[in-house]
Image 1 (cartoon, one colour):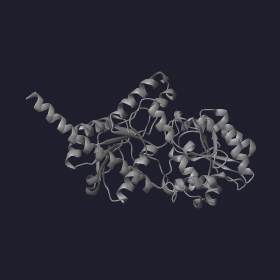
Image 2 (image 1 turned 90 degrees about the horizontal axis):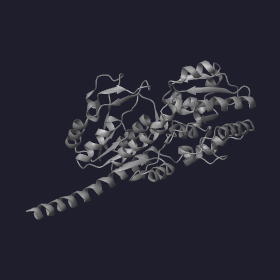
Image 3 (image 1 turned 180 degrees about the vertical axis):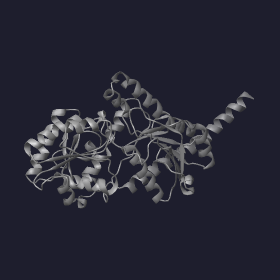
Image 4 (image 1 turned 90 degrees about the vertical axis):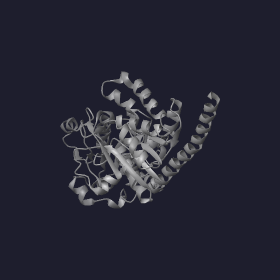
Length: 396
């Protein structure tokens, strides 16, 4: 197939949406499909090479307010319609609900090309963390309107699919996520790194990986770590990532370690060298870092929803807390710490729970979904032509 992927975030930006789209694109190419990517221009972009220009289209962009380093693309309806028609695109996938994403859905629909949207971010939840909770219902309605214009909406969990259907989203399809279990693997554990970070073999290294921002519920990480330290005084806390909350966190917790943004092998090494992963966010649609932590053999402490709900069994392959119950999350972290100190490694079962999740399989499932959309579209279009012809003859 010739597929068009449209996303307003893409590496070198580091976030779950950008990395998910990149992983999908790479595995589609590896499977022999032709893929064209449309994304906003980024300040780090150099002069396009001929090879890039053949498969990547960049549009003008603008920074996202209060989110330094992220940009949204300007609408590009005319350019997208020409691109879809000239390259004979079979199907379109739109990963983001920004201005570029809206214009992509409309362009594909105007040309009768099937278009799937991806539900990656609970923007309605974000407003409550930025002093605008009164906009949550409007944000949900805005997202529903966007996604219902697409041929279908792709989601990573059964839980999210059911929630969207119950809230008026139409044609919601399941497309599971995967994790690179070769990159994220306990064999990358680095004793020299642990020594460099100042943690002894008898104490746990606790890690949080993700954007350091208000919507990530980071105060619960620090509260849980205080209880962990009460059980294991020599435990260390390392934060991987960056964002608007980093400065305040560093000032409030000078003994915590802040590694900044890590990629590739460095990220995998930090994951595998840690012992406990704290992830108290309640604004995720999935949470790719949860799978990365499980694949790396860590004991994961998370709320019982999204990726954690889909792939973990509490007390067996990690520790789950009832959604949004802070005290429950802290108790889960305490249980995980006591088990770790006794030599019980829940991370072994966590690794086993995600070893079957193949990025190649996800790409194949994606192509099958897009091919089905194309097939349905080809059946509908002749029917529309027959109907139009009948109406025309009636008027004559």
